Amino acid sequence: MPLRLVPLLLLLLCLCLAVPSRVQAGSPDTAGFMVRLTVPGLDYGRSVAVGILVQKLHGISIPDQSGSSGEIHYTLSGMHITDFTMPSTALGFVPGSGLKFSFSGASVSLSGDWHYKALFVKDSGSFDMRMSGLSLSAVLVLSRDAVGRPSVSAGGCSSEVGDVDIKFHGGASWLYNLFKHLIENNIRDHLKGQLCGQVTEAINSDLENSLQEIPITAKVDEFTEVDYSLLSPPDTRADMLDMPCKGEFYSLQHHSEFPVPAPPMDLGTSADRMLYFGLSEFLFNSAGYAYQASGALTYIITEAMLPKDAPFHLNTSSLAPIAVKLKDFPGLPVEVRVESSAAPTLSISAGNVTLHTQALATFSALWPNGTRSFLFSINASASLAARLEIDADKLHGTLALDSLVLTLVKSDVGDVHVNLLQSIIKFITKTIILPKVNERLSQGIPMPLLKKVKIVNAVLLNKEGFTVVGMDLRYSP
Ligand SMILES: *[C@@H]1O[C@H](CO)[C@@H](O)[C@H](O)[C@H]1NC(C)=O
Ligand SMILES: *[C@@H]1O[C@H](CO)[C@@H](O)[C@H](O)[C@H]1NC(C)=O
Ligand SMILES: *[C@@H]1O[C@H](CO)[C@@H](O)[C@H](O)[C@H]1NC(C)=O
Ligand SMILES: *[C@@H]1O[C@H](CO)[C@@H](O)[C@H](O)[C@H]1NC(C)=O
Image 1 (cartoon, helix red, strand yellow):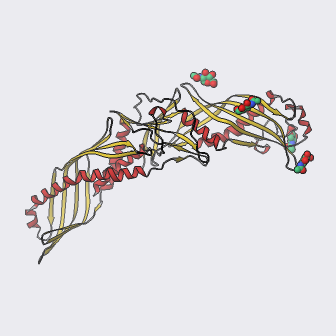
Image 2 (cartoon, protein in one colour):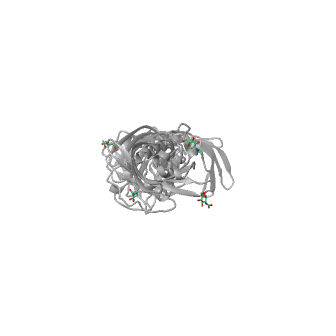
Image 3 (cartoon, helix red, strand yellow):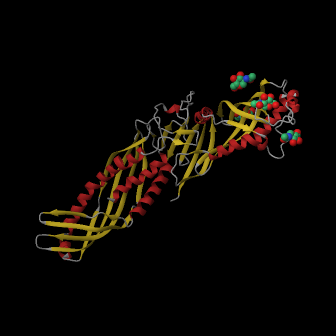
């Protein structure tokens, strides 16, 4: 039955909301990621889904039907929909429960061939049928399954069928047209019984199964994945639906929980845009933790990586002013290994987004025979101003160095001139490390949206401990 397509297309909408997930229960307060769908969002989803549905139903073929009544065997074949209209549709929130989809005044026209065979007679011809005044109202109850995926089930359905009008052509059509009313009433009763049954089944099986197939987590890159599982059932109110999600990054190699709980996140009454995402410091800090655990935050800096106009060279002669004893290693290339020594943390407040990092930089001289001599190591504590941006399908950021504090950890070359070193480390950070980090950041965090859905009119607002991203969506087939 083509009617199966109705809920299937609602799925499209639900997929916009449905996010990849993994096991874990908790309270909404501890969400690292929050999704809010608003009335304009629901309405846009409805118009897109209905548009697709109407388009798909045009010209669709209906499987042959055959049956028998006493000695008469009949077949309806070659049936296809010639016209389909759904002038009035609605999709709304049902507080505390889920969504309600309804349509009214819909009509379907179809054509096909009929054929029957009794004991000694057979006859055949074609027919045109028009069913109008179709209406239906179905509730979709949204919940959370045991592993934290969104789950849907049918929560009541009612339907009406207005008129059925059938015309037979060919064969002894004049005869059947006499019984037209009887046949029409039969079809109407049958259809009325079928409509809700089909829709309920489509919600409970097709739609629910599709939700079950949503991948459990989204892989971000070769180091991490992000878990978007629902922490509690979707919270539906009269004009919005909030889905508190875990929003935690994990290292692919060392899967361990980020130890600090997420701060409370309240999106307030934001409801102008179609969709809102709340991104907690927790989400970013679990990312820092996961990258740190993956060993992904290590950089080896060599002379070859310096820009041509660098004011110094990475060799012991050029760096000699930093430590007197460097002249014990004449004319040797120097390598700097910079590794994050503590997971970077992000703090979000109304004015600023700041990333705090701790790194250990180790300077070594390289002998021609390949031996490496340790020169000195320093702790670098850097604050970086982070700018978050959102484009068509992902959230990304850029970092700029704000402050840098160096402390000498160990030296094999006597006193180290930390102030001179400061400008060298700053230069390396700005010209080599940050561009690399920013390039990785520009790949962004994939947002849980369908491929054909693009983000427009994004607004980004920083609050205490979290960022709210509001957006409208554009579906392009
Ligand atoms: C070392 O640095 C000096 C500049 O201070 C430069 O003239 C020289 O070519 C460099 N040596 C090597 C081996 O890169
Ligand atoms: C923003 O960050 C700067 C430097 O870290 C700090 O001086 C300033 O107070 C911060 N502003 C707000 C509103 O937090
Ligand atoms: C490499 O050369 C340095 C300096 O000449 C020397 O001290 C070191 O022992 C050599 N290492 C090896 C493995 O030959
Ligand atoms: C260097 O940083 C590490 C980790 O942040 C810290 O444990 C250590 O005490 C620091 N050492 C110095 C000399 O500041």
